[in-house]
Length: 276
Image (cartoon, rainbow, N blue to C red; front, side, top):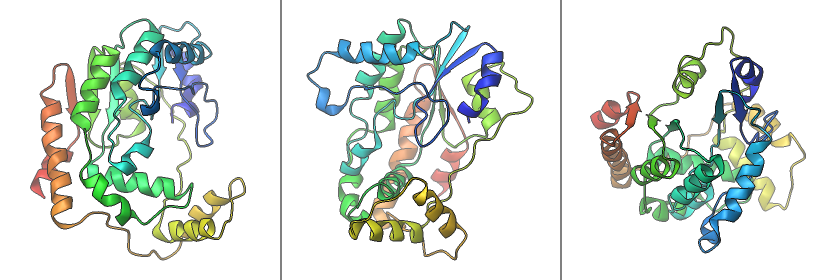
C-alpha cells in the first residue's frame, strides 16, 4: 500500500524506504540486518550496509518513513520456536544508521497461534515442508515473545512513541498512525495477494515433493485458482490446552505491553480473546 502511494507521500513531504519484496514495485530498501549467525560480528558492518541502502531512498524531505516487515527478524526462526532473538541488535543497527532516535514506531502484532500457523503456511509456498504438526512442539515452547520484542525495538530505536496495533487496520487508519496529520484524498489500493488455501498448499507441496519448480507467476495463478474452488477444512494448527495456553499468553503479553512507558495498544482484540 505504501509503495503504491509513493507519489502522494512525496508530494506531502515524506520520503519512503521499503524493501519491495514479493513483487512490490519501487522498493529501494533491502539490506543485511544482524541475524543470529552474526552474534559475534561487528555491528558497524551492518550499520554501513543499512546506511547505504537508506541513502538511496532519502531525498531530504521533512519526514522519512521506513517500512520493514522483517525489522524484528525473519519469520524462519519461528519454525524452531525462536521468537525474533536479534530484535534489539537489528533495532540498534538501524538507529545507528539513521544517526538519530526514531520519532514513531508502529507495529502490528498477531496472536501467537495465528502467527505460527501463518509462518508455516508462508514457507510451504516456497519449499518442501514437513507437516505443521512436526513444528508445533517447538512453537508451543517458544522463547521470548511480543513483550520482549516491543521493548527491544522501542529501546533499540530510542522510539519516542510506540503504537501497537492488535488488529490489521484499514490503509487510511494505518497512515494516520504512521504519519499523524497526513491526508490523501484518494489512496491507491495495492493488489491483494490471493488467499492461501489448504488445497493450494497441498498442490504446491506435491509439486515440490516431485522435484518440480515453479515458473514466474505460476504459484500466484495456482493460489488464485484454488481461492475460487470449494475448500478443504483449514488446518487448525493448535487445539485444546496448547491453543488456550498460546492465546492466554498473548493476552497477558498485550496487557504488559499496554503498561509500558510510551506505548499505546490499539484494537479490540484483547476483550475478544479474553472472552474466549
